[in-house]
Length: 125
Length: 119
Image (spheres, rainbow over the protein chains, first blue to last red):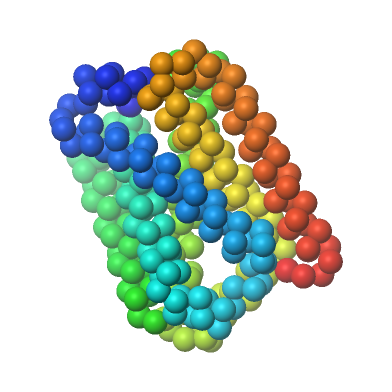
C-alpha cells in the first residue's frame, strides 16, 4: 500500500528505484491528464453531444495530425497511469503470490491488446 | 492522514473512481476502434449510445473524472508542499464541493439537451 506522505517518505518507502519512479510518474502524468482528459470530456461530451460522434465526424477529426497526437497522448498516458494505479490495487487486495501473478498477467495482456488496438486505429486513418 | 475520517474517504474514493475510469477507458477505446471496420460496424454500436441512459452514464463518468482530477491535485499539493498535509481535510471538502458543482453543470447542460429532444 502506498502510504507515503511526502517525496522524502516516498523515497524511504520505495523498495526500488523503479517504485519511486512510478510514484513520481503518477504525479506528473496526473497533472498533465487533468488538462487533457477534462478538455476531451468538455469538447466531446458537454460542448457537443454523444449523438454528434458519428462515423464521419470521428474520421474527419482523426485525419488531423494535431487531434491524432492529442488523442494518442491521452491513450498512452492514461493507460500507463491507470494500469499502474490498478497494479497498486492488485498488490493490495490479491493476497497470494500465484494469484497475483495470474491476475497481473491477464490484466497486463488485456491492457496491452487494447493499447495496440487504439494505436493502430488512430494511425490507420 | 490516510487512516480515518476525511483522508481515508478521499483515498477510498480516489481508488474507486480510478478503477471505474480505467474500466470505462478500456471499453471506450474498443468501441471507438470499431471505426476501423467501417461505418456500419461503428454506427451499429453508436446508435445505441443515443439512448438517454448512456448520456446519464456519461454524467457519472464526468463526475468520476472530475473527482479523481481534483483529488489528484490535492494529493500533489500534500506531497510537494509543506502546508498541504495541514489543510488536507479542508482541501477534501473543497474537492467534493467543486466536483458537485461541475457535475451539476454537466447534468444541467446534458439533461436540458435531452429534454430538448437531442440525444
